[in-house]
Image (tube, rainbow, N blue to C red; front, side, top):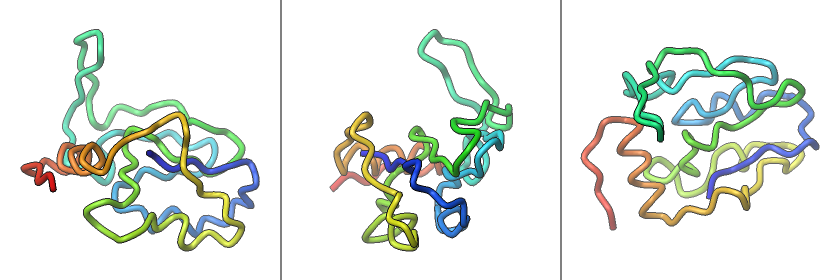
Amino acid sequence: MAIIITDDCINCGACEPECPNTAIYEGGAEWTWGEGTQLQFIELEDGSKLGGRDPQEPVSNDFYYIVSGKCTECKGFHEEPQCAAVCPVDCCVEDPDYQETEDELLAKKAWLHNEDAVIA
């Protein structure tokens, strides 16, 4: 599963620099697929392509947020999600809307960083 930041967030920003995929953004900030990854473009479900540097709308305007499509729970980088490890108010929690296996998370990491997927 991806991680989500709850509305208990105090906007301290401790989580943002810890994310190896640059999936965490300050509330109100636009994000891109390419930032912190090797993605030059992504193909959407309808077959259209989106540039890796094309700005995307913020997921939240009020609190730090995590882009679920970029979150790998730090699999392949760390033993535990680093955002949750450093959060002083424990508001970085598993997102029940994005259930993914460890293999899926590792494949997502490989896709984000243009690596050959190594699935255990």
